[in-house]
Length: 308
Image 1 (cartoon, one colour):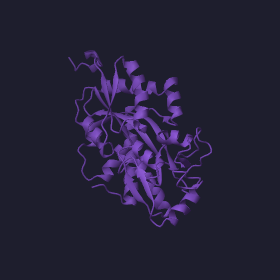
Image 2 (image 1 turned 45 degrees about the vertical axis):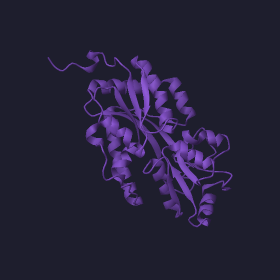
Image 3 (image 1 turned 30 degrees about the horizontal axis):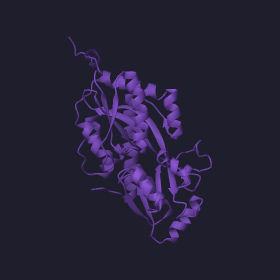
Image 4 (image 1 turned 180 degrees about the vertical axis):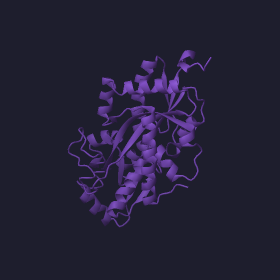
C-alpha cells in the first residue's frame, strides 16, 4: 500500500492557523483576514489568523518554516520574503528548502503620501523641490527595514537626489500614525493602509506605484507619469507552508484560496482596499518567487542597502 493522502486522515479535522508575520490591522493582515474567512467556510474549519510580527516578516516566516508539515500551520507571506535573502547575510530559515509555495493571492499598490498640514506640495515635482530645499532635514517612514515600503521610498529619494533619513517602524500602522502626527515627512505605503487617512484629508496622495491610475483614486497620477519613467512596484502577497507538507494538502489549500479570490463578496472587500486579486497554481507561485528574488537582488545591490 502507498502512503495515504492527508485527506484520507480527515484533513482538516481541526482549526488551521494562518500566520501573518506583520501586526494586526496592517495592510497584510487586512487582506489575510478577508481570505481566511472564505477559506475556512470552504474547508469547514476555522482559519485562525495568528500575527507574529517582527524583523520584516522573518520571525513569522521562520516560525512556519520550522512548524510541523501537517497543513495546520500556514504562512500568509508578503513580497518581503523575496527581499530578505538579499538584505540579510543570515536568516534563520531557508526560503527555497524549508517553505513550499501554495498560491499567489494579491498585490497591493503603494502610495506616496505626505502630511498636508506640514507640506503644501500638491504634486511629486513640487514635493521634490520642497524636500531638496530642506537640505537633508527630511525623514521617511516604512513598515520595517528592508520592507518593500522602505525600498520603494529609497528608490524615490535616490532617483530624485533627495537627502532623507529612513525611520523604520514595526508595521505600517504606527508609521501612518506618525505621518499624520507630523513626526515624519513622507511615506510610500500600501494604499489599503493609508486610504482612510487620504479620504479624511489627514494625508495627501501625490502618486501611486502602479502602471495605471487606481479606480478608487483616479485623480492621483502614477509615479511613472510623475517622472520615474517605467517605475512599477507593489506589495504582493501569497501563501506558503512547511516544505514537507503533503502535496494533496497543498493542492486543497490552493483550490480554496483560488476559489476565495473569485468569490464576489471577497472581491468586493478587496476592491474597497484597492487590492488586486491574483491567483495561481503552486508551481506558478514558485516561479514567481524565483523571479522576484532575482529582481530584488538587483534593486538591493543598486541601492546598497544592507541590514546586517
